[in-house]
Image (cartoon, rainbow, N blue to C red; front, top):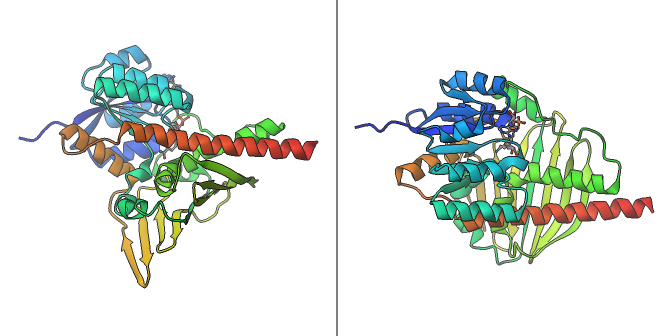
Length: 353
Ligand SMILES: NC(=O)c1ccc[n+]([C@@H]2O[C@H](COP(=O)([O-])OP(=O)(O)OC[C@H]3O[C@@H](n4cnc5c(N)ncnc54)[C@H](O)[C@@H]3O)[C@@H](O)[C@H]2O)c1
């Protein structure tokens, strides 16, 4: 007998829901069905719900009380993730998928993890590359060498986000521009801007980076600078690992999203498909001595692998990530981003003095 698909509800129906999750779930209809779409903007909720035959809602209580939501996906603005994740856990969702970042503070992330542990809820954070097969295939091999001296580089080069959204769908509702509403004026604003950019972009791959460095709790930011028109370059250490975290966005450059590891006995790169592009997984290359092993591209991209792993959790054939790891991922990202903010603020104060 075939099992009916698991019910999915969305909190927040903006760009990520429309351009990423809807097309992904359309490929998994036999296992996951969108039943409800909640957004404070009722027009957006209705339009998005209509597209997939779901019920719209602009009342959170009503949404949370509706039957048949095995999965609740939190796709609201970052500052609301903790509140919405806690509400979804309390409402009895079996799986909560929270878009990145899990929360804006480690304390909130710990509260969410504690609530999920008590309720037995599986928690997934939408850091899609953690599910991408080009990473999962080489993860054990690469993380096993993290105690050796190595260089790790995370680099994201993207044209403006809207281009990818437009490839995928026609996005209903307002747009969030990647750039600042106004150019930063004070030293503190310069620092905060870079902090937010790191927590918006590099945060996708920082969970992978955390597993590759020698000591994720010993992060020191050595150098940080803003890149024009929109980006940053950061040099840091994490134990004996040297780290470069880079992003450039806003020009019609060819997309290039990669993670690289250079160690005493290994050279590895994973080249990911950019966000919003539904074009299969990344490709990893691991070279030892004269031998290079190439993995990928696999048919599913990270988003599809993320939803497939949610279906497996619901079907009892897969496990969710460890809650402690999700909290540690956020702690690592915040430590790096806070360190960059402090250094940039200090540089601007010194140059103004
Ligand atoms: N994994 C990825 O590749 C990826 C890509 C982009 C964004 N994101 C994350 O997804 C989240 C949403 O990003 P987006 O680009 O879709 O933003 P967006 O601004 O396009 O959409 C957010 C939606 O949330 C709605 N909203 C606002 N307040 C709400 C509330 N109180 N309750 C319910 N809905 C509310 C808005 O009306 C809007 O429709 C962010 O946390 C972002 O970091 C992830």
